[in-house]
Length: 295
Image (cartoon, rainbow, N blue to C red):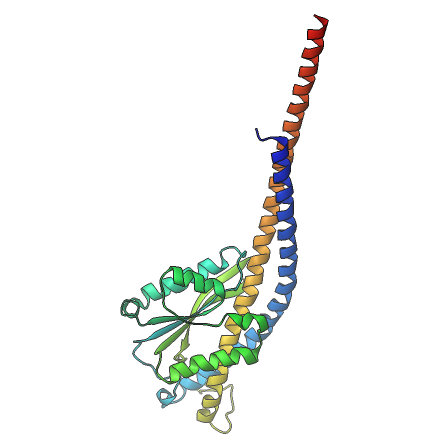
């Protein structure tokens, strides 16, 4: 059995750890509320905008002429991996990083073997994982979470769209954690470019586009909507990941705090047993000494 001093040191260490994890849990809970409100507010807008865009593209005969909707041979692929800058959030980073690597090794296996798969990382944890997995990291945008605004995200999205427009990449995928609740994140991979066309809607009388009146024209609206929709989609992915990160960290710190409390209970019990045994030994030694003096 460990000595009393050693057990006291361990109890003090676990108590300090519990204080840290409890504080981190409260900080993450406060940040989660703001991040959750942000993603819940933008999600309906982003989904409706994407729905309108796909409905419009499906109704045009010359949609292939659009720069961002024209299908290409997927020779060069860019995978955008969104993680966090800090750890201590359970399997949040490792799970999504593994999904990105698996995506490259399965869906884009041929391109990966020929060295035509690049990664753009948003979050330091993703960079570490990809480099350890010996993947090609073409760029890093780790500072975006310091000031996560639509304007700053638009700059990154514009650079990504430009690389696609210039032919640097033929296919771009987004891989991120989608926020569901504080305890659950959905591993998500979705095609970012080219924009996938939807199916044209019909009402009960067989009329198309019954929900919308277009002015000045469908073609003009599409050319305006596509870049904005892509920026909104990119921004939504980052907000999703940001909220999911705080939820994962809050849950992980809650579990760590509970574990620390349990360990402290076990150590305290162990300390009391050791202290009782020590006192019993001292009493026995005093009794034995007294008996020896009598003799």
